[in-house]
Length: 178
Image (cartoon, rainbow, N blue to C red; front, side, top):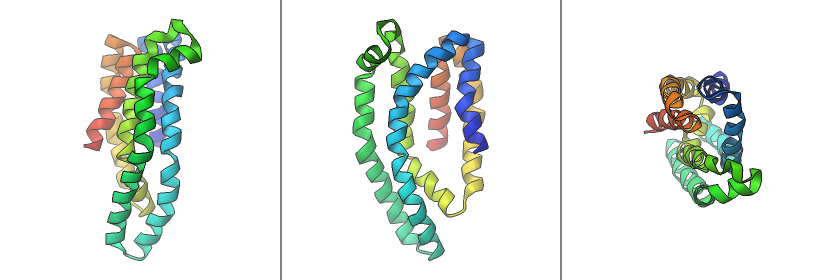
């Protein structure tokens, strides 16, 4: 939870220094749009967690592997089409929601949604690791992602503003997930 809190607020802090407080306000627009994808993505783990914990207590390793495969496939089948729609429709969604003066943030929506897209392929595994008591491993992965994310987000944020900070976040997450 600690790494999640740091991760969730780090971008805003970096943007406040790199771009200014107006940038933090603008950052919230693509953040909220991609949150639609995160909301959809959050449904499956709540179903996977108790099943994984039960299988672990029964020492059912093969079934755990099957749960991972089926759960990841289901997450991809349910989440990828709406996430692709968010990416494709990022510009009209941004304009409809907040107006034409924020059209420039549609690329940030695409970058943010790309992060969510990557999470589709990790969420089941991370949930299963927590369910079987591998919390330390999940924490270490989160900490490693922050260690990669922080310098990249600062460097890119100073060069490219909001998109730079989001790119740093995306790069940190992508590196840990490979």
